[in-house]
Image (cartoon, rainbow, N blue to C red; front, side, top):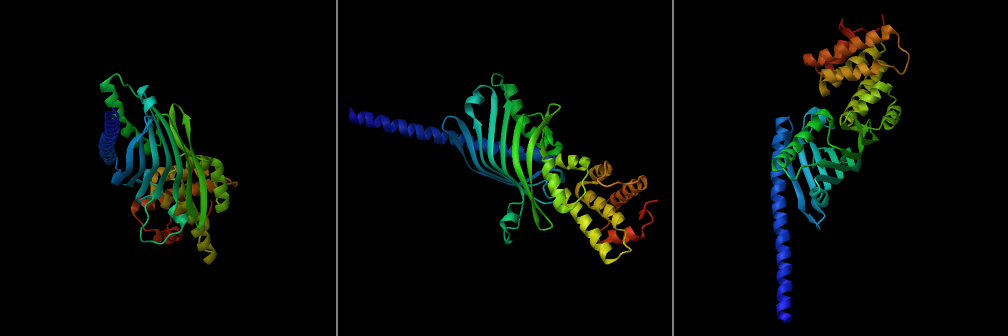
Length: 346
């Protein structure tokens, strides 16, 4: 009797282990297929997945499907890159899909330790601050309704998820209910800046936003005069915000240094032309115009109509230089000699 009982126990243990291994194998295959589909969907939107893998996938008890140590390297368009024109490393420490909620028709997903960072040279010796530049400590909660009783609707809803994710990266908003919290860490002029990123809901859509209060603190550190309209626009583009702020700082410091070296250089005109030029090179002329126009709405210091006309004009000239393909090193000379540039209010 004892031998039979022992054999039964061993059989149950063996069956359980085999069952778990089979489930893990199926989950791994399904995950790989999902990643392949996601990569194809991304390619159609100009997002090239260079590399993607996960460390482990399986059941977390009977409560959740769990993925660990997911890493992907993407060659993304400028609109989702934390450093325009560079490859980005996207990572998730742990992600869970709640099985009891899934049986009730809700795909409840939680993810921890989410990071979005600029790809670094692995051979370069970098400080911890440099390695951590990007979005860190991300936490995600999302609840997506699905229809389990209708196979066609279920398949359609599953196929739409990657499309909606890619659309979110492009438009910065989605109708999928989600909550996200992370910290953006970046360096400007050798100083480390930090800003919180959270989610907001407006008009039936959910979108990411950078803390306006943190942006005001950063502006003070940089001695940058950001208008409230400018802060609002930067806050609504948290993935682009570090690059936008870096460009603002470069234009200010270079124009100040040039004027200090040669008093005949029109500091304000050069700053606006260079700022608009760099923004256009990084984000395109249409978005650059939005940013520079926001700076003219409710200026921090009093500007006359002539001041505004000069700034609008020089911002336009900067965009034209970017469209024409001028090099950054040519901008100072053109700002001093080009008759299109207004060097003093009139």
